[in-house]
Length: 114
Image (cartoon, rainbow, N blue to C red; front, side, top):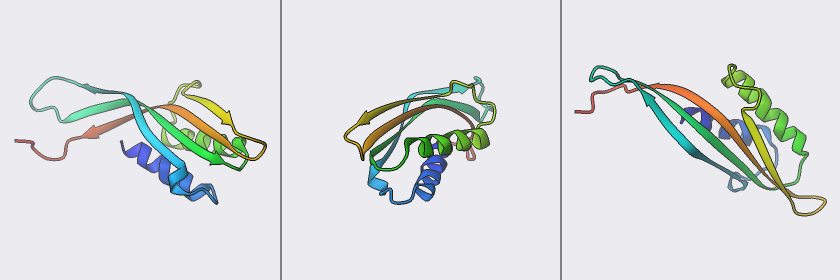
């Protein structure tokens, strides 16, 4: 899940004042797509990446724009509806944001597992 690691790093480097403990990232509904065969060491991962930003005090549109830009660069063939969000507004200053992003990546097993 290389893309999710890259996305987390990108957000932490782009959102000033966000503590890493405020940013939760995990995978839901992961699926491995592979072709049967002993010599096949390629597979595809399809999954929903969940990004939760807790107690965020900035503009929610800033986070959304960062995610849209990252998605356009790192998965340019994404569907227009590849990202969904939810928000829990605490007060006039803080909000919890949750984004779900459909991601796909192709991997290759680099060594023999026997």
